[in-house]
Length: 130
Image: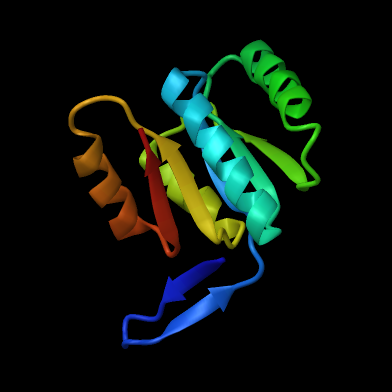
């Protein structure tokens, strides 16, 4: 189950809001997608996959591949194409959707710094998947 830290020593169980997964086609993004789907399956939250490619054809191909890969899950699946795919756009999209959790892949040095910057801008938890 997911809980939100109220920053006053208490926690609130999160029962709604999607698990938002940032997807850029990398191996790290694949791992993030797997983790997000597993969490959504356990917690019962829908999955919102944010496709971060400037090419519409690539976004459509990823969408089809992800739909096939997650067809066995019962999770509700939505997609959003963000051609820029930067931190600000990701945070804005997550807030607009009332995300319970944002999941991003990481496999390079400096990802911890970028994760800290994301945490400062998000209104929900962040899972960094290696």
